[in-house]
Figure (cartoon, rainbow, N blue to C red):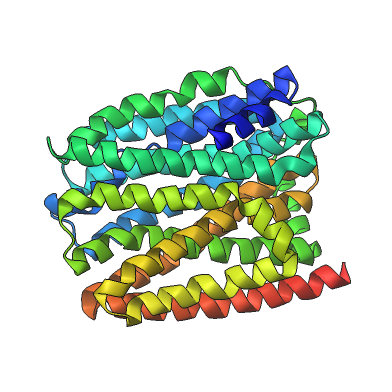
Length: 406
């Protein structure tokens, strides 16, 4: 009750128009993350004849679609408006789950993943940019980490409670949760359509040219070295936590956990992310930027390695710790990127972050899947964890270096 009353006071302090936008973004986050299908997704795929390697390749297709559309979608959001881009993403996400509901083979699953990837690319970047600009319109941008943390926690709480509901629905059949998921995804459509653009933050329509998009990318990745390594580090950590989210269910299977407990564990893990997201701004404030970034760079990949080394009985506690770090990482790292970005290209930059993240995931996921199928799940976790540790350390050192020089 204390938490809820505190949130109520926090939201009531916002001007009416800004509060309405923030709440609608919360609805979009809910619809995107109330994933009834996730607790049983790996058993569902295996029921349809897919191996773990094929599952990871399927997820790579999803990431490749995002890679292809992430930057154009972010650029469109900066030029045509965040609202229109979010509306497109809401429709595509709904279509993707509708396709999944009636699909029974690998090819059809790929088509569904393409639609879902396109929907995700139109929402990611645009939602964070809309939130930051909405708060900035009311001169509340310094509170972005707090509201991004709340938004992230809504997503994780949604996924957590969806774990229980999805687990119960899966007792009817592993396909039944997909039917209900279509209706859940559709709730984002009216929320996105009723958003209001927070002032004139977008570029002129006359700049809607491929050449201008290339210029923006060159400006970010070539000339602004501080922002470049900020994006790279943020993406490495994001890809690591995303990979661990997909490795959780194979770990459940490897430990011999009954299928009936998948939904409960999925709920508990996502509640952990949700609670840590809410407190992320406090953790960052207490530790400071340098210590927070160092903690994320080292702890997450090392915990992946530890997960591969320890016996089954010790895996679950470590998994919960990884999920807690995941909750801290998302709002904190997004805030650092937002603060380094000008408003007229903010959605493009946030989309670029997600693009790099998905490229990294598209490389890491098949590697982890192949190692797990060929050798063992432990080998997959240990080797990919070490690769991520090297990448996170190098990108953090470069980020720190060029931040001092900027």
